[in-house]
Length: 149
Image (tube, rainbow, N blue to C red; front, side):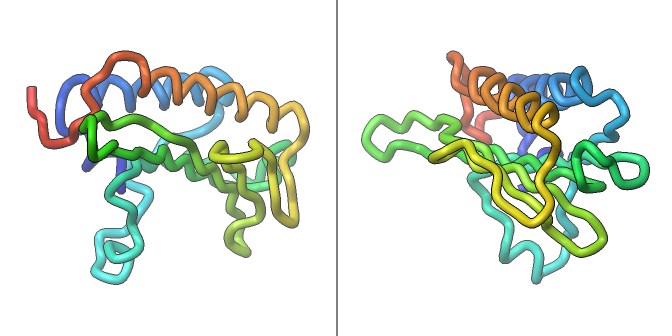
């Protein structure tokens, strides 16, 4: 779900801003997009309500990224027994004019797959950012999007 829609309280908005800052610190040319999904019925059906999605766009096609845009999807799970909601992983995808060209999932192997993978230096920085994002969202925070402050 678009990060702009998930920022329903001060704490979540602050954590989303932290994610943007983490990414832009490593990749200052990137422009953030807190609404990477269109607001139409077809797209809304595909959007995961248990994620916070942020897009980043580069001027032109980045040779080191081997893409023009990156979509970061922070996935959440709420334990039905404890009612604790936490970030369980991140899906990152790189896109160019052909569509998705690579993907990284932190759910299992933390490995890249695709036809045009980013340079190893970029891949390592992105993995580091993903680790930091998980720490941001899983360190004593209220992740309930229905709680307004």
